[in-house]
Length: 173
Image 1 (cartoon, helix red, strand yellow):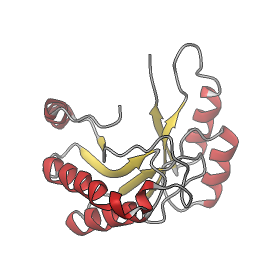
Image 2: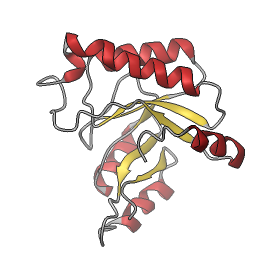
Image 3: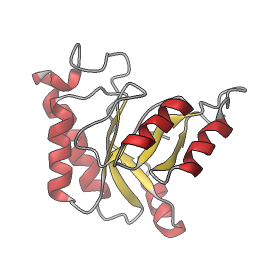
């Protein structure tokens, strides 16, 4: 899930060997990807974004289960994201950065891992052929009801390209 903030979850992940993509609690779902109407570029939102990144880092920095820092889900890409990324890299250069923008083809230049949301199997394969970054789908195969279509096709791409590491199934219900 996004934002698993219960500390018990982190403690269990530490002891059970699970990995966490630790995500800053920022989701501006109903705003377009930048540059238009992007909260991450508005001066009045800069402090709020950074406060969340700082709080996440300070709370979770000593958990070995935290594999990577995630600067947001469906939050566009703007100035505040770059500021958070700079802060996280400065304070923890050993963990990679990840970002999920609002589009299947979105990427954050500062991210070490490309995090597309709902790419098609074909676009995922096209990206695997051209990227030097690892790929972890931020959300794919939305599983509400009977909607795991293309699941086999996604995993054919995952198995074929070592750059593609898999992804996070959203709404496994």
